[in-house]
Image 1: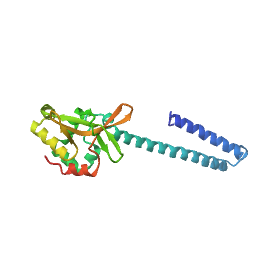
Image 2 (image 1 turned 120 degrees about the horizontal axis):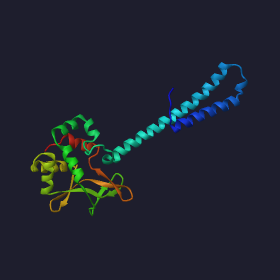
Image 3 (image 1 turned 45 degrees about the vertical axis):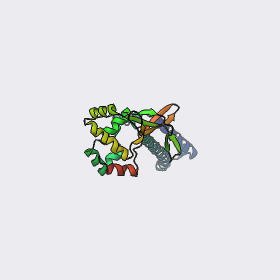
Image 4 (image 1 turned 180 degrees about the vertical axis):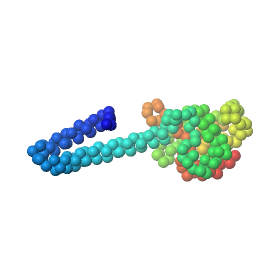
Length: 219
């Protein structure tokens, strides 16, 4: 026998028993000698209750699945079991982009920058024209030390580090803001999801222009 300890299931059994009892009383089934008829009536009652419970359960599961998808998209860092954020799944699912990622160290560069970027309130903040909102940039200062540290961390030359930042800027995955003891770049922006709590959002999204940029990426 299957034992289910769910409170929802316990409520379902209680409702099922209640509906059976009400049907027995309503049709005076206790005083009917035809067992087949009685069982037919009770079967129809049970079927309706079971189907309703099952449909509601599927709806709750769909809602939970939608919530899981939202959390993974809205909080990629917080939801990630691993330290690295990139590549996103949609990048791996696209064969042309996946091939680019095999040929170039894009994911390594993006992950390095993602870990080292900072909160920065530019006088002219990032404008989300789609939602008509403004957000503070997330930035990194690309000076000699930054390039040397990136090169050491990833395992290539300082020259390669500079080429990757330039190429990703050309692809609009990074945005050049200004010169400030080096070059100040933005790789995304922060959105506030609770008071004084911010979520990092990269510019790189599953959009046509970024797919094109990744497919055509060259150093």
